[in-house]
Image (cartoon, rainbow, N blue to C red; front, side, top):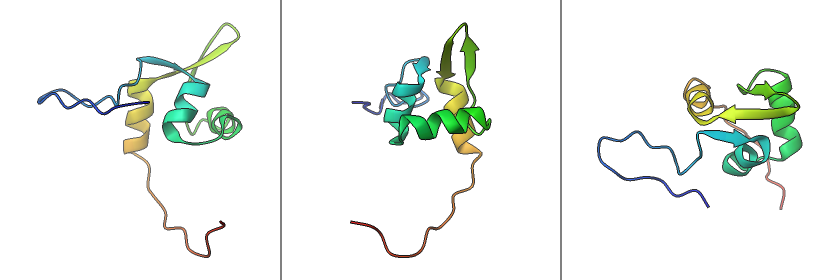
Length: 79
């Protein structure tokens, strides 16, 4: 669904809207919506509450991902 933009000199935005719902961000990150809500609650993912809605700003999400350290997961993968 999200195609990477390839214009030279333009920061890639992966086709994401500037303001995303938790569901849209979860789809992009390929995680369960409940997992993303938990990450928002623990402040691991930046989000804003607008009334009763929680929204995630694309640029803030991508910037927060750039600052994350990735861990190596070992062990057997489940099928």
